[in-house]
Amino acid sequence: MQQLKKIDKVLPEIMICGRSLDIFLDDIERFHGFTSPGLVLGGFMVDWAQELIGLDVEADAVVETCHCLPDAVQIFTPCTIGNGWLKVLDWDKFALTLYDKRKLNGYRIWLDLKKTLLFPKIYNWYMRRVPKKNLSLEALLEEILSARRSVLSCRAVQVTRMYGRKKKGNIEVCSTCGEAYSTSQGDQCITCQGEGYYSI
Ligand SMILES: [Zn+2]
Image 1 (cartoon, rainbow, N blue to C red):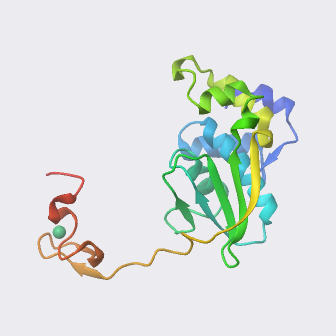
Image 2: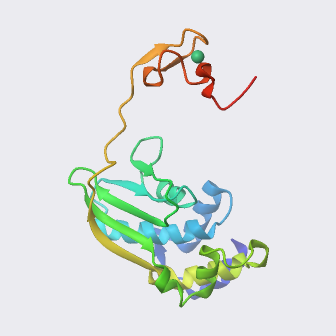
Image 3: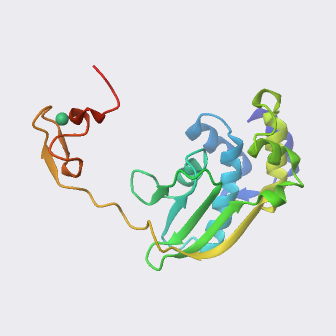
């Protein structure tokens, strides 16, 4: 991102998730479509969790919001929604946990609102105190890049629920549409029961 070159000169030595700042920001933009502040912050969260758990540990991930943060895990770890190693909870909490997939112990990292009081742009952005049109993305990103872990907190946790891969149900052919579907939906597929998401 061109406008962040200034920061890049200030923080030339910084490495995030094993990348230089340039590559870190490029990877975010390429995957996500733009340099989202939540994703930059999320990169620092993944970076800290990876450091705590150790890069040699095979880790699964839980993310506690659908917004932005799941992409930080998908870009910077091997965990994706598709391979089942990332679980996304629709709780709108800016928090994630990386944990050892066998021993289930790991670290939860979250945006600590108390700490953002020292970084008013981050606080106002996250709490939506300022209308989006009045928010300078550049200024916000600069504040995130100077705050880094200082707006985050971490705690060791043991995962007790929602781990492991979701089992696939039995597959049958729907008698109405003829498409294969999981029988956990009932005698016909969910769309033929009138509960689908589209009309023709
Ligand atoms: Zn059907």
